[in-house]
Length: 287
Length: 270
Image 1 (cartoon, rainbow over the protein chains, first blue to last red):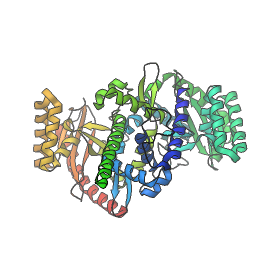
Image 2 (image 1 turned 180 degrees about the vertical axis):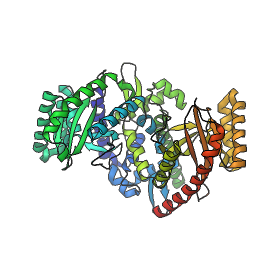
Image 3 (image 1 turned 45 degrees about the vertical axis):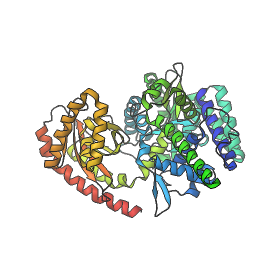
Image 4 (image 1 turned 120 degrees about the vertical axis):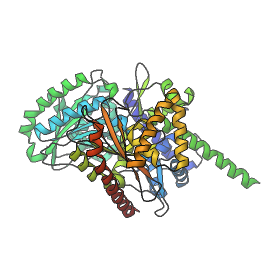
């Protein structure tokens, strides 16, 4: 419960930062919900998050558009982050990029924990034996963040996805499986949130989610046939650690022709059994 | 007069923001390479910041999704948001793109792990890490940090620093080492003499039992960026002589190739 509240709160606090940004003065404090909330830290992190594998170099204006803050504020924070060693500035380009120091912000700790190593081994076996690519994800607000990706050694397809990639929770089997694993109260709350976000697309999205949740209830897994990507089918199973905290989700994908409904019905139950075994072994606090 | 007041106030603001943001990020850094949950007190010890400051930072980081709070003990663990930032850097890094193919080939050929590291305060941090498909590996990845003074990769870096910086860093290492300073200095001096004579250094079972590392410095063409290239592994029956004979010459050769490949990639980028 608290995780859900936290991430929803995170979203609203980011939004409030964006809304009150035009006041120019960082110290106004209007709209601040929590007096402990450190605005410069939130803003600095949102600026670091603006850089993606696709957007290597960003200038002041581009960052400002992405984080919804005025250019003057962004400019100050970019210089601060440069001074702290987290960004590099190219005078030639007049743009910034991430410096290696950002790797020191806990990347290895998350990418490399014990549990993750254990999971990785099992996922790799699964990928190899079923010729699929297997992904492990966790929810972050309205996205699934991929933590691990294992390609099969005889892979029929590979996706250019790396750990840290985000998939929309409302439109992927991995997302539906995670929604299905939530207690009812949280589920309703999250769905209401998704509905507000999706607006006009909601009827179609709702139809998919309803079907997936029914499948989850019946079989313990849900599947998508080409929803997320027109040529890929995915079976997703929630992985809830024994202590019930921070649910993960496992996705097993293949090119659609290799994963027809009949094959899904055949391996789905096997995957559910495997994931249940794994869940018993996982101390969630280490993930 | 009025002008001066404004500009000095602006300066004060800037210093305050730098400090606030810097401290907040310091808390994320404190989680190091283990995913072990930490309490506010533990974080205060590691960062040397007051506990009241820490609790404001952790509460902010929790509400942003960078940390999660584990009940009932109230320890914190890193959330997955940190992966996004690190991954964006790794994917975009031209050094990594240029170096990876050569390093992977080397790792497979010599059955070792190969890492390219930069200094991060008193530690070396790998920005590229490749392992051989066969090796018993150390549990490392890009972003992993190791102590400068007890690893080959760190000592090769230390050696290639300009004299003044080298002396400063050694002074800080000695200070941190306390009573172990003598031992550590002996290790550093032995490595320096290897580096002077042969251009590489070796560390066996120093940082971790049953592991070895062999490293060469890699100074980029700008003359300022100093990296360190390491080949290592966990092996029970390897002799130092074998390492020196079979791996060292190839590692030195690879460092030269990497230097050229990285220089090209950086030139293409700018």
